[in-house]
Length: 535
Image (cartoon, rainbow, N blue to C red; front, side, top):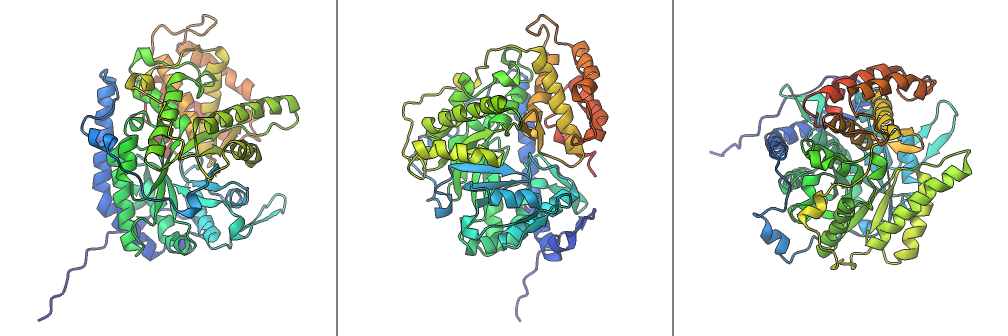
């Protein structure tokens, strides 16, 4: 008698929304694949999120983040990450942006070394946006992506493959659900949905081209969260019959807890990690959130919290030292400026800030940097070319760097101006309105704002308003009367809303921000309550 092995029961996967092109992306085989991911890893994800809450409760009670005692051996060990693939040896300029077809084409054609296709901070996760983004990337991988603008008739097409930027994909973080896809009646992880669906459709094709697939992993807080991603990627490789370690990743160090576990994160992902990135805007946001109950850790307005501030300089230099010690890339942060048309003087002032920032990065030992706009690529490229003749700077070990716990948590000094307070209100309201309207990447006052910068604005407002005895530099108390005046002045400040992204949802956004700033407890992420309002 022959034995018959029992087959694992297939999870019930339901898509509860409709969008153009959905049938080609959400195939029965793809849904089954996503269901297996959810079944295998959802309990672990929930455990990791519970651990986050416990860690934050410790901070709220006065505790401070620090290097872990139980992982000393990892930090002291003599080990390196796996060798990097040829396509990721030179990453001196990377461009990031959303996943709509026009952006995908322009970014891949931009001349940057890498394009990070972003399902996270620069994409509003409406169901049509997600489906269109996955469809665009499938076509891009196959070289067939084209786009014609309906307003101008301009046609966009990809350059030959060897002239394109290397594609990397950033899924959403562990904390987010994808409410449009239910597995056994429960929403699945947004990150597993984004990464899993892309891998299912594109992993084999990219592997044949020696292009990965490659991913950026956001919002990690611990080595255990990194290990979860490693287990997920191992699972995907087995399911898709890919060699172990085929899927490569770069991790964004953009939370304060994670900076104390960089060695550990590299170690957990050592067979597949290419580097760490200074996700500085989210890092500032995380600093505020981590220390939301610490009156002595209140930061000044955003414009004064630059990378030259001691706690951010320490973070950046420790990241370089840690990565290069382990044979990984240390990627620099985002230049959010965009060209200022019609004002040569203002444009030059903005570009000078970009030059100074990129010069700081390459001089410190970073292996590459980020830009948000294609026009900044030549500038960043030129600075790195002049000072980094080699493909990267992993040989720059920064043995001169000595960073302590206190260096990483020391707040920067500065002030809160009326312009800074009202600017935070404007950025948060305008970005949230655009996000609710389906636009996750918004130019505001010649800066490309995304969820990370909006989170700085939102959490700063909450912390300032919940810290007694704060005053603007002109002596005005920072209180809810000041917030109310900022809301009342906002329509005049904005002017004509008709051509503004999300202009029709400004009042709704004001209401959301008002509730969030009055709440007794700081909401972990702006996108959590806002997501419920998306179609």
